[in-house]
Image (cartoon, rainbow, N blue to C red; front, side):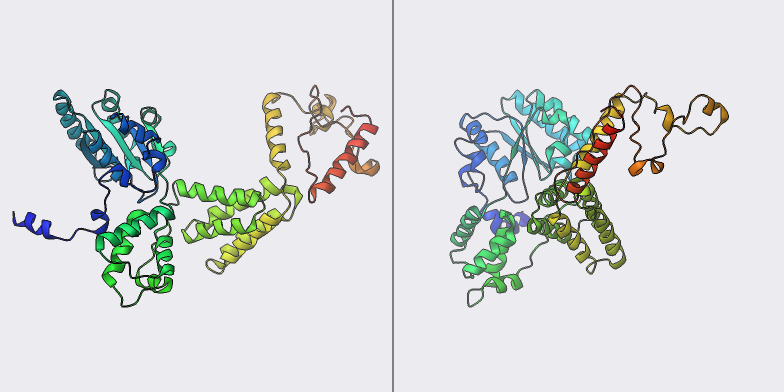
Length: 432
């Protein structure tokens, strides 16, 4: 009793006091919760389906789940996948079955549902399928990677957006109304708070509460705000979705020859603590895949940058990675090597049993020589122009053109060479 008394008198955090009491109070998710949004339409019909709410931290996933239960008159059963197991799920399902016999439904909310392993995810599928529970799972990770196909086939996936500046402004106004006083910041300080929150409404309200407690005599500007509150590290998980998102952004910026955008994504990855060996490995691959012989120096420079970083370490070696990114971004682009490899492999898979022509086989024994191995081989260095024009494809296979150099960079010169060899080959009697 005494414990309950003290708990009731304890001040509630600002984020808890401002927790929305209706779906219309949830900010930044109108595309889902509005009258024309998929969840809004379901609530309007007083009917829910199981769903996965996928979005960044602090965008309202837990709040939405709780309000969905209230708006549709379902019992709210929250679980965290971090702290719960199959035994906890079993208890929830038993209670849900009992409620169902009394004509009342259950909304099972599982926070961080991606933390459940495949077997745990499978354990609640029958209860979702027969309607014992309406499942609402919340995750910050890409469901297609983290949730099994059976679960995804039984639940709709809805993508929640990071909270934009307009919605963050609305939260700031609500916090001032709740506190009964303006925030002790000027316009630049206000902008700094939103930038620090980085789309996370809960984090924004925690920052605001800290600033209200500080209560300076004069409004704080951006610098003062930065000194007063600790800025969190950027959200970045090296092993999950953000890891793939940022390397994709870097790769496509390089391919699009946007040096500044590429530097930005590189900086995001370095600040987030990405493994530099992974970055350098991807840059080296890019040098071959997206530049190739359009600039033959791209690959050696990528390898040299890797070597320089290994010798210098961070932070001195970071500049070697930056140099590599700038070189690759500004180099002429060609995927001719990449396409040639794919085409050659396709042909090899289709004709993998064909033997090389006899004249280019070695004859290390007398018998092999008698069988015609190496017979009539023309040594190209003895031929005019160092080119014999012989056929090197398997007998019975038409000549193929796998490598088609682009008319960019050094491949423009290579294209001339290829045309020259083709001309000589035609003059010296090879078909094709």
